[in-house]
Image 1 (cartoon, rainbow, N blue to C red):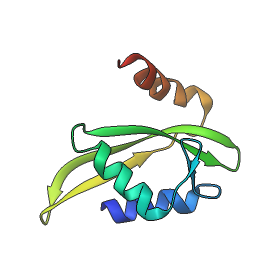
Image 2 (cartoon, rainbow, N blue to C red; image 1 turned 90 degrees about the vertical axis):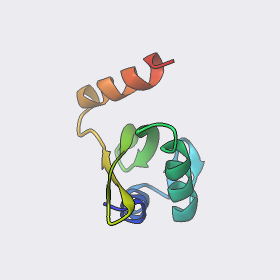
Image 3 (tube, one colour; image 1 turned 45 degrees about the vertical axis):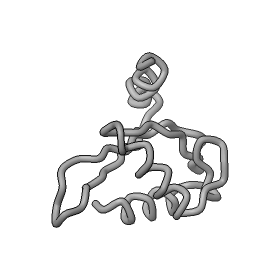
Image 4 (tube, rainbow, N blue to C red; image 1 turned 120 degrees about the vertical axis):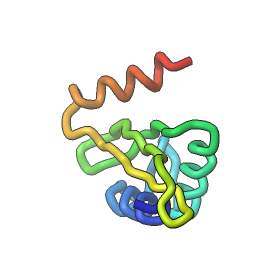
Length: 92
């Protein structure tokens, strides 16, 4: 997916556009993801969903038609969220 598709989808899934405890516009989310993935292949964030706040991961990978491609992973269970939290809090 393109950065536009990822940011649009994530924003539409979120409750009120809340990420990392702050209200984001689609443009701000897109710019944030692009900035964070300039020096890293992925970024871990928190998204507000109807069933609570969840950590999720956006990954940047290969180039297609001159553009980076992106994908995201939102866990379905709290147990699936543990590796993402571990990566975020133990990567320093």
